Length: 131
Image (cartoon, rainbow, N blue to C red; front, side):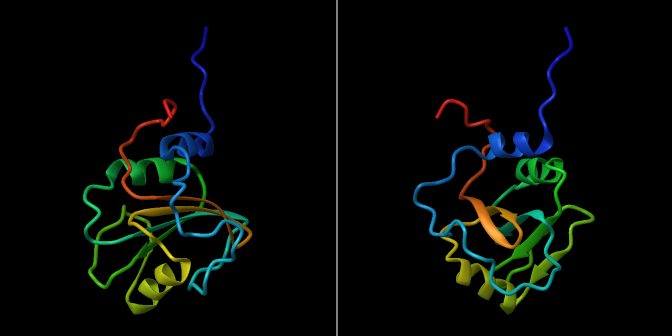
């Protein structure tokens, strides 16, 4: 019997786990002004320089197969994977604050410019199935 393959978006959702009940980002709200052209569905990663190793998070986000928007907030440059354009500077920080991001990194699943789901805080690479 062949092993069952998960859809990339489903894998991302499982990897991120259940949304944080303490998240301050409001579901259904439109994104604050940003420099990119919105896609029908996209993933926005808001992070700062002190998030530590985000390798597993970036891997899960990129595997989702959706456009990825990287927002490097809080004025100190931090890397993103090759090929991912990063928005930095005071406007990127203002974007994070307008969203009311409570912890970095924050991953947003966005549909038609509105926040569909949000995860805040550390990413351990676990599937979150035990929650």
